[in-house]
Length: 239
Image (cartoon, rainbow, N blue to C red; front, side, top):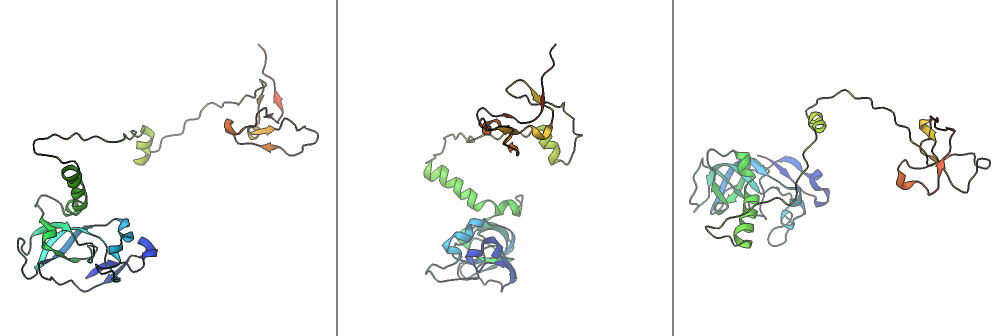
């Protein structure tokens, strides 16, 4: 079978490679599942169980991934509650090979029947998220039968603007030409050269001994106190 394996923890996701591996065999109380969809999160590569077994021994090359949905193809000795050809979804053991493969061997107790109207992709996304929600509501929240739950979001996302929606859809609008606005200096005069808008002079400098213009950031927060434009200017016409 084809499977994705990792051998070097320092390499991260870049070290994941597709290789040929032998199909797993069903042990006692195990089930072999043909994987139709699986789930993987990059943080798995930082978990010790991805690289070592329960005794702390190295088990690389290992197959990552823990969530899956698929069809049962084989049953181990003593396995009950499931049958060959049944649609299932579930969660693999942390210290065993995972679900980024065509087949996976899992304990039968870690699987549940997948309804026919639920897609394999949806089924593979449920185990960890569903267990987290269950623990939050019933174990930590101590929710009881008959109680009500208020669900709210901790923050509200801003709705995208019309321009952002059009850009995502690939629609380009003609660029509108805005009227040119000239920046005025503190002395009441304005510069008519666009390239001189950010030029300022230190209060202690003079035109005679300074031959190089000092450029400042265009933001007002970075202008030096008392600085002024160093360019030829024209006074505003009087009415």
